[in-house]
Length: 530
Length: 80
Image (cartoon, rainbow over all chains, first blue to last red; front, side, top):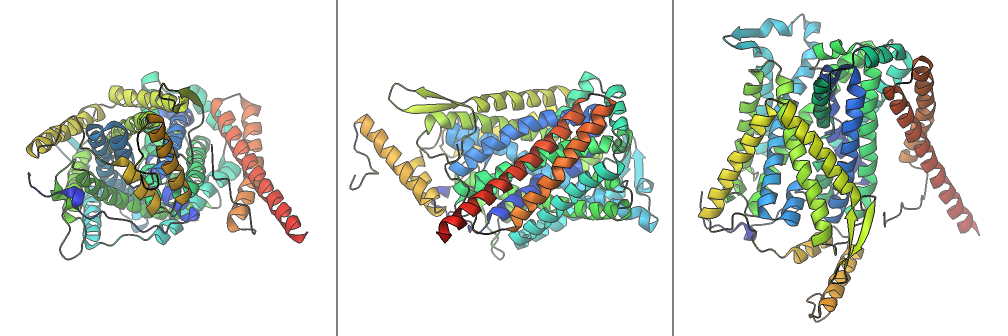
């Protein structure tokens, strides 16, 4: 795959900045808020009576991750997310590895959310007298391979690939509407569930008598991180928001706490309405099943939740395809992967190689997951691996960038910082919460590796294969394997802030660089006539 | 560490309405969850969720009240 094409000279795709505060919030919610539709059944099935605690513990780590993303996305409002922060803070190799973890997540995203979306569609099958179990076949060691469900999922992914190659994507308005309707529905299920159906004695009985073993609890705890995946959408929204430094901190903090409260609320209301075993039996449509058990409203709320779940998960699967193609496009731009991924379809002007390439990986993963005893659990295993691995690199980048780039203005900083004056006179704020978050996400990652049989093999195997590819690609193109290609990050930051219309921050950044150069006793290229 | 404070309210918006609605809903809900759970036993989920709802609701009400006060200040300042 060697060629002489210089991606640095390739046209930089600039996204239009037209997302509002509310749009930014609902965009994030449409992405992160969809996770609970998949996670609720899986986590309650694993953590049993201790599910609310599992959600709460993972949620605390998620809050720290969210705050880290808020700082990074408002300081570096570009769409690359974790991959860009790692590239900037830790260099090319770490940027590639973070990108690979994200690519794994986006690819699993396609498979997992398409499978979950069709799972919610299947909620309606009994209305037509169809039983999903009738389509399950067994052959050899493979048990309960569901032909109908796998066919629906594969067809959905192919349809999404076709839409993306044609360049059709949902508009920001559609995201806003679906995100809002979903927020109202989820709030309604929790609130009306608590008011009309919640039995605290059932919750207490399950908490006391059906608390899982430590290993089961740890498994559930590590799975519950999947209900908080999708924070990359904060950085995605940052690239398409005007004045992101002002907008992002407000919307993302609200988003983080809404998702946290709903995840803990759902598990608590759920275990006060139904025994945990029922969630395990309905892990493909847990929210719809729960909603259908709310007195008076259930007859309508159940099907509506199933329809909305199917829709929002369909959009999330599409986010996976879009995420894959944008990320690989960005990695190609920074010469981390072959420019082959930069190929744009001659007729539709979309990154067709990236879309189709990763789409087929998504289809293959779906079919392989259906061959295992529990399809959603298998995909969630891999999802948790990719997410926690990527988040470790995000925390590391947050800490590293505080040291290597203290000059970029940070409109929002994660709380709890210790000021440290360096020998050169500059001051660095050491993020204590960044270290705590790194510890928290590291512990979840360790739990994933210890307790997830599939995740601990398939996840590292994916990373290893990609690293082998990276070594070959960089060597063949005469680029450093462990080192980085020289880049003018200061000019890049100026361009980013200019494009974001953050002129006040731009001026602050320029002044900070001039001060730094003055302290070093060198002429600054940023001073007037310098 | 927010260097960009919340903009001063110029009018009553749908977001303000949502904030007040959420606050009014979450405060009694949090109290009810806490009271009903604690009446049976002291358990982590009950305290956690009841407390979280209560705190979230109070925060929303406080935010709405702060914005209202700013709005009144601006209005009175403008009238003078």
